[in-house]
Length: 223
Image (cartoon, rainbow, N blue to C red; front, side, top):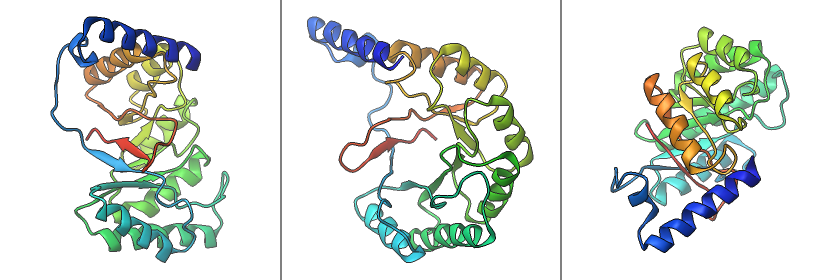
């Protein structure tokens, strides 16, 4: 699907260039003059809570008003008590450093089992994250749905899904609140539009994922 997506995107590019128009003209016209972005990857060398706080401040100084990060180290499936405390300390340090006006999103990388994911979500609630991303593997829609039914945070998922039927299952079951299709994996631009339309029909948000890091590791935030 990644190869198909690349070909599809390239074909759109060829058509737009042949028409002498920006691609958005061919897709229905401009909808927004500006799109909000969030920073990701800014915490790559951070280890301590203070490291995370310093990195967050640096990202905000670049103009970002939203930050995504993974505070869980190398934890897998479960979190030991000391790992849980360290994760909470990192999130608290970031929240204290950037204040309440900056959004934070917590990345789970699909690493937890259901019970741990629920425990972690409750741990995160005092820091008001905009979303908790992939607390469990996102191709297990049933597990995502179970976590979502037991927590008060919004869930984000979808970057590891590859077909329109997969996204239909995710969206129709309302197993996530933020749908994160990756245009470079799910079939390309046209399929991404279809996924967004299905999400809109279920009153869900979309925040397209980007699988590779450019300089500054910018991601789009659609909230």
